[in-house]
Image 1 (cartoon, rainbow, N blue to C red):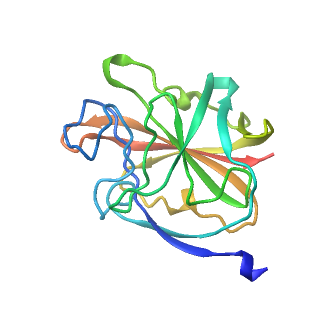
Image 2: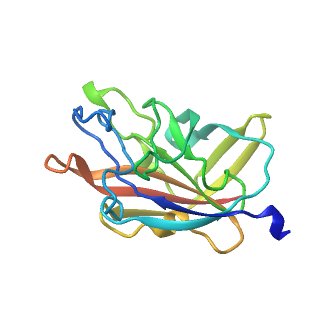
Length: 204
């Protein structure tokens, strides 16, 4: 059994950008959530290190649906940027699953991020994530057309500098899905919002 488990230590930084178009080539999104800027950050200033024990799964997630807030979006697959940051979805209408962690439905915490806000007031996938409530269901459709259902357990707001390791770590042997977007006031000096909205959900 041990031969089927591969432990990986992954350095993960999260910074969610929304607002004006950013001119730095690395941060290509306008009104975006970029999940890192510097190697010194909690949500933005301190690294999150966690161990993912790779599991065998034959299907990949394709769509996310949250009927109560009108989300019906494609799932992109992202890993780490060259500076050790979680990458972001290339399209504001899509979400991004961190594919170096568990797949949705596997043991552990699968993490999906989406944009909040977009330039010229165009919609983004998680614009209404703040309206979600405990007990709401999140559906992940895989490539076979099967749905994995998660139920929202907890909704928290983190300061952008807060330690967020619990978003990515899970030791209870169960399958979880955690959603991330930004919230709070726009900090024009830091080019990011002041807080992060985290949705914790458990497999039904």
